[in-house]
Image 1 (cartoon, rainbow, N blue to C red):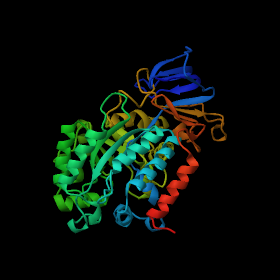
Image 2: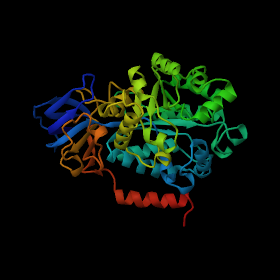
Image 3: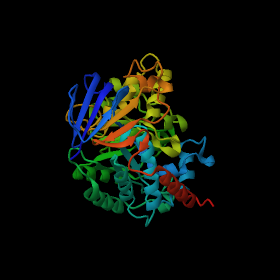
Image 4: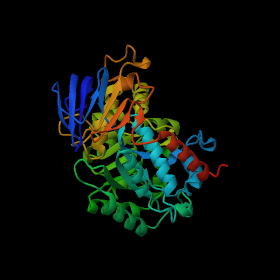
Length: 452
């Protein structure tokens, strides 16, 4: 297979357990793995001169809804809170098909990669009747781009007639969901070291699925050896819903259905109380923090400093781009840093803390900290390079560990390398005609939204 030498790196921020920073080093990669980090020179098929470049581990996006790229910035959904926002969007999302999912996934992942993302976890839970193999469409898009993926087979079985939010046309029976979930895992999930595709099971939320679906999904996931994911503790409305319908707060309800453990991660986790944080810590249950989305939907501020102090696995995510209106983990690092400086000035997270949430934190949430999330010999060669000779970094790069949080980056990264292969070069996606994708995606949006 191929080999890659990245030479003359100015500062390499490893995000390893010792928080090592290497100055003026070379990285040698072979067969998709990091083989050497030193001052040694190796012969390689490709050489990148990283003089004046900062080097970071690739970012890991632990929660997304890629299909939502086609409904971002719609006037009718702006300034809405979650439940009302969902009711409006479901009437549009019920028309999803393989083409909309393929093009939205491809455009979304291309944007993520240009901003340094090397692993994406997407939560797709809208499956209209006869819409085809939507997970397969996402995997095809990921393969076209060369990005590492953790797609989740989401699900809903409670429609409006059952007291849920979605229309009847996008919910399925428990039997249909479990059957399709098992088939998709068998077809697409790769549990091997260095895998490019993994799957998880992900019923949507406590207010859109039944207790039967949650319980049976947990059983099936553990039989199949895959992880579990859902939204939890995102809003006060959700908390009111579970108290009214089940007599329990959201986490207590989920815990009773088998939904805690080191194979489970929740999106958002804003409204956990102190006792619930202790449960997460004791069970190793993970949380994906989505700062920009939580601000946009006025959902609240997650207790991230306390979660970090308790050693709860915490990663970073952009959430759906119809809520966020963007897809950049660079932005999430910066927004998250500022959010917690404002909310917890005495014990807020540092810029470097936010970087670690986006890297090794995300790897831990996905159960892959032995493979990705830090730059170490033996790990996957998922790497970002960023040239410091740019106007927005003049005088700012003397603390390379914190720079992405404290200063932030206003443009794309220079290189994104995934599994030892260059996928973004000089801010452009390598395996893609970007202009054609933009034209194709915009045409699909017009058809999807029925815009002439």
